Image (cartoon, rainbow, N blue to C red; front, top):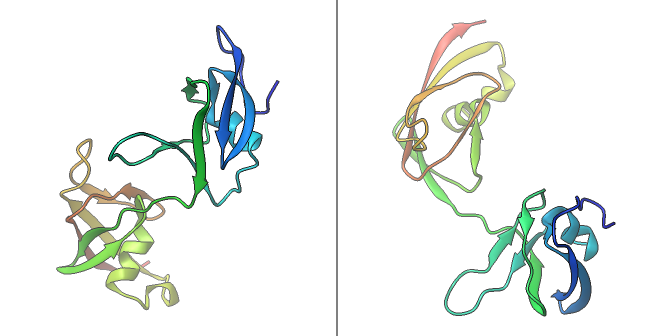
Length: 159
């Protein structure tokens, strides 16, 4: 059994191509099985090639079930990052990660923050993701970012 592959109903072998190399894979399968099958480096992601004027689809390296087609093509590559603009205390910043931590927000506002961990800050946000469009970011916490998300950072004093 392929590492990371859990028994799935109606399993059979299909021929697929990853980075122009031929492989036989159980179908259905998982990303957790495809990544080691083609020895995809940890810093890369696997993409399912699509036809037409569409972006290739990322195959997550996890337990999600993937249904394959005979002679389907995949390729590995660096993850595509989508840069968004976030606003911290009125200043726009370009951000290319899916999440941001409380410490990262404070550091954007006050670049000297890592040298003064004794000072505590309050971080509030609005225009956030649909499931929680506003809230408070606690120390050690993180939140998914959204384009034009607004953060307010204020010093609360010495800890």
